Image 1 (spheres, rainbow, N blue to C red):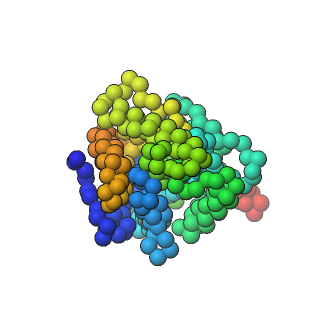
Image 2: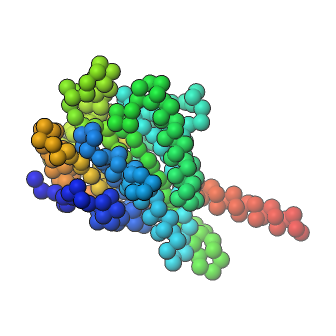
Length: 320
């Protein structure tokens, strides 16, 4: 197998982040779509790698902290607006973990000329890392409540944190962005469910969950195979909710890091071998990410800027 890097048990998540992930975060802040995915068998460290602990933060908190550190360090006149969403895919259903009501409308996916549109997904505007962590903590709490009621455990669902980044250049003299184009980018951080076969999942309920997980990960495998072999006549993105959500990242217009986790146990050799095969195929997918710019007046950054200008005008009129 040919892989970009191989990390042993002595490697810290921070080392992994610095060597393989940090540059993708900077790319997202510079205008490129980016994604980080953790794949592998249950209990191989995917969630620890992505979420970590308060003492040893995982890739998700490290990426979020890096985004805001980037904003603090930049010396170019540019304004940014960041939004975060948090969702999971369980039994082929998309659950918005930030939804404030149990009767919230279901999350729906639509295709458009501009790519995938997600309707009904709550997004929170965030201005500090701590605010992001508070939002995610609320979502995690809702997920744990749902897990108690519906027997949904973290290893049995796919979890995705999406950070939307809108940025636009500003004039140095007056601080106005004028008609400058907006650069909307997406940083997706994904903790995939365990990739082991159904025979290893135990109870009947786990087998049912395993069926849906196998379906989504099998579809992901088919998508990766088609893309790695250059078979673009029919890439089966629509066969699973997971692959539809990942389509913008997998289709090539994103800088993607795939972290594949394996077990050191000899009894898990077959599953580790399958993980290696998946990683080897994924490495062959061409990535041709480009910066996306738009003059769309519907961007949230543009809407906020217009609202600020209106308020300034009203204030000036009130003073006269």
